[in-house]
Length: 146
Length: 146
DNA sequence: TGGATAGTGTAGCTTTGGCTACAAATTGAC
DNA sequence: GTCAATTTGTAGCCAAAGCTACACTATCCA
Image 1 (cartoon, each protein chain N blue to C red):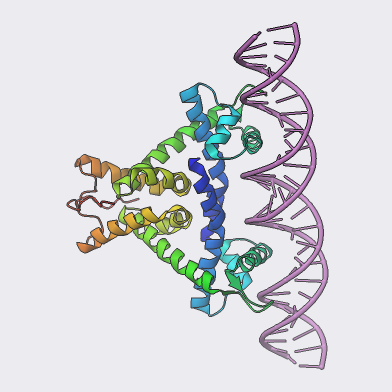
Image 2: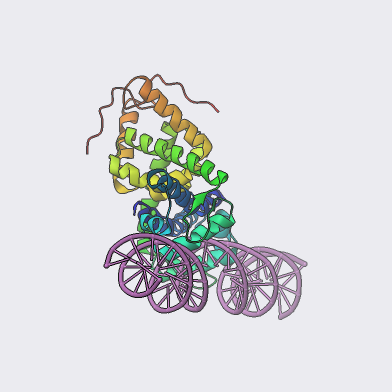
């Protein structure tokens, strides 16, 4: 049954991607239009609109027809969590020696499968590296217990 | 378009999971039965059989009705690649301080999104750690250039 | 040699996430 | 204010991946 959780993560990955993009568009452009969301994802606007409909149904987004998409409080909370996790994953990959552009690309897929404990370990790892000013974790770092 | 590659990775993830499990069953049990594959994945046997049909269609598996599933040469090659990558991801997660059981679980999802360059970086990272015999990478490790 | 049990396969349904094609609304330029 | 262009929405199609229910084979044991 090991794969079952990976499968459910796959299911929520799309919603997380949409929410992440919508939040980003709202921040940078002031509005999130269906066409822009679609372009960012590399799908047609019809696909985007249908998926946005599911986000609305699930209480993550709202907005009136022809008036752009907005996030509910739940949507914003999810976006914040997703964004922070994304950055952590990118930072870890880069600390491990992955080139920045590749790290950014791979993080897009990896982030949806990083569980809470793993995220915590990543953060400890990064805190350890930055504490010494080095890009790598110091040898003296204690094993993180949970 | 950053998300497009993550999406296509999601598409091949299931095939990779099946091939990985089939190879493991062939190794440990000598045969891969549909019911066992289904149980490992946490799906019903009907779902497993349908997916195995797709693997056969795509040239990864073969076998006669009621006679178990086998891998083609392509299937075996894929299984080998997937298994090696899986182990690397698990090792990296543990080196970063993720508990073994969690590392095993998260790797199941993460591995499908680890690109070639990232995998190479992971291997360099591990080579650096093991050279000192420590579970962690030494602070003195030089940045891996690419 | 039969049955019972276990395993395999088929049929038909659902949801998701894609697509194209078309229709409707909005916006901007005259 | 009207018309063209853009954007948004709808309809209908497809394949994948899941399910339940039922039918068919194999296998094993009495």
